[in-house]
Image (tube, rainbow, N blue to C red):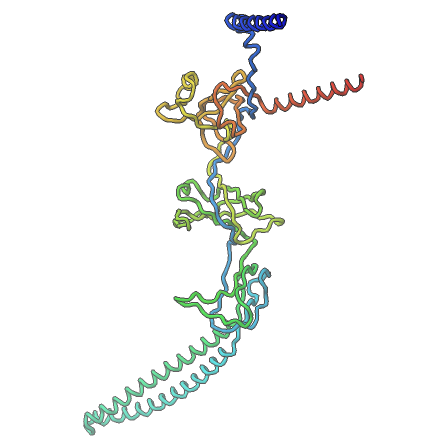
Length: 440
């Protein structure tokens, strides 16, 4: 029992000594150095680092719209009749002047025959009226001579004069009826001609709305009528783009555009603004826009169809040989969270009356530093730096999630260098394993 007590006491003494020694070490310079050595080192955050560089940048205005043919026509009937032939199907190519619809002309032919019969009758009436006029004129001449010599009373002369005037009126009316009958014949013949409908342009039948045997009707003020088919010139396509009224002053005819069509999402088309509309229009979401027609450069292996959805990026301003960084690198930071040294070094780049300052993160001795900058125009990927950075100065450009939470004096390493180090370590380990295998 005594021996066990002595051992326990010895352990207690050793623990007390070590504890006391540890306390003494932390209270001396040597102890502080030892503690720093024993402290786990800060692990760097892996980031993507790129130098600021000079480039050309294009400022664009975005305008969505639909691809449409420059020339397209709706073909409707000009007479009400039944369709007896549709020589072409949807998708067929037609030439100007080719017959695309034939209508039944039987009823119209009967109307022409009736109009001709009416003309014959009216011409006969005219001849009868002219004969009556000749008789009335002869009688009126004799009565006037007798009246001039006083051989007949005034009333007899007036009756002869009235009969003559009535005969003249009857002839004029008969002649008018003849003209009406002739006009009816012309109209009937024209209506018969309308039963043969031809294409007014070279193009493709994009829509066929009717079938053989269907009755088509003529449009009126209250009825749009029957649109039988549509023909479009698909060899000459445009993007009819909606330019927001806030951007319309920047868009000019002749500007180049990059057009992203949903059907060919990864391969844009080139285009040129040909016309900018003068009338403000209202879109279905309530916004206002002006229509721009953008001529597309077509490619044989990528056909453009009417109705394709697309978005045009219209180049409205060019900046050449300017200092830029990736747009993702440009951030807004609260001014009251920036170090005083940063604010002092920023000069006029930080307006302390505002809440936020525009910064990029640069590298100083392996650590981050928020660097205020003045930015200029931006495109989809790059932002112009007007002041605050030098050409070639290294800037943290990603990952974006890391950038959002980044603070000053944060230890970082370039992901490219980290990959090289990792690869070197892996190669060294592999070489060591190979050597060990050979020795064994």
